[in-house]
Image: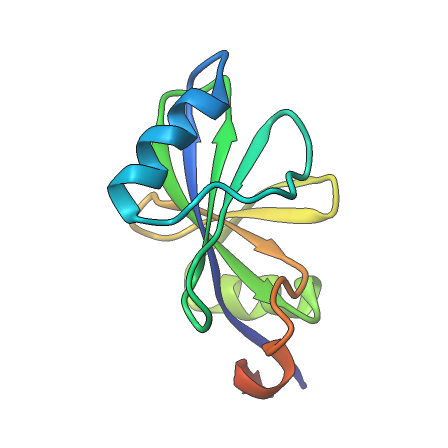
Length: 124
């Protein structure tokens, strides 16, 4: 058995300055820019307690928004999603990129929030 849930709204920005893009999204969503940043490709926004996290990411492809699904077993979650029609696209730096039958890309990542264990859905 493993668990998963929707974890992060990732705003992919084709830009050389993710901080500039983050200033717009911070103002648009009302989420302040976090004081703690993972690295120079990402800018984390502070979401209210209990709400999905938001992250601005510098990318080379066209700008878009994708979802991160947090799970305590990425391989088991990938197999579950493949069984219902998703395709595995790539495995990168500790996450798995998937594609829904609709063509939307999303990522499987490890648990991101402290309440993951109590609020994530269990799967057989």
